[in-house]
Amino acid sequence: MSNIIYFDLETQFTADEVGGWRNKHLMKLAVGVIYSTLKGNFEVYQEKQVKQMIKELASADLVVGFNVKGFDYKVLTPYSHLKLSRLPTLDILEYVYKILGFRISLDGLAYATLGENKSSNGAEAVKWYRGGAIDKVIEYCKQDVKLTRDLHNFGMKKGYLLYYDKRGIRKKELPVKWKEKHFFQGSLF
Image (tube, rainbow, N blue to C red):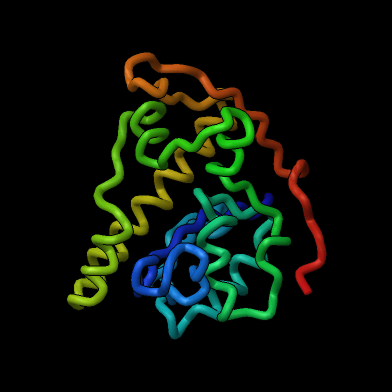
């Protein structure tokens, strides 16, 4: 049985606070959540456990996330010597952009495909973190991992995801061809 890890993280700082989106590596990990198909459960990591979380990611046959290459891996860069971008990864946002030529939010895909919405956003999670409401941050991050997992499973079973057109009126199908062996597996060092 292969080990697919679904992954998301929340940060301690917003992009504005670190000088813009080009400085994602300065945003620092607040909470990371993974769901492993091998273990069948959610695991929560805080900054002091980041090395263990990265070890778990590196053990995956496939990491699945939403904007994981463009955001999450960049946030984790200061914590590891591994080239996280070389992990076998399915970045659902990257896939959507390559097919459609424009971005669709996790919330938009989840609503159209699964009938579910995100519970909040990353800026709110930073506020919760600073206010000591770490349980809220964890639950929010877990929900994003669950939505990502459910979108991936839907796409694997049905061969498509759903999204609304740019006017938000008509549902359209986005064909997906996700096969684990299709993804790059290179050296991590």
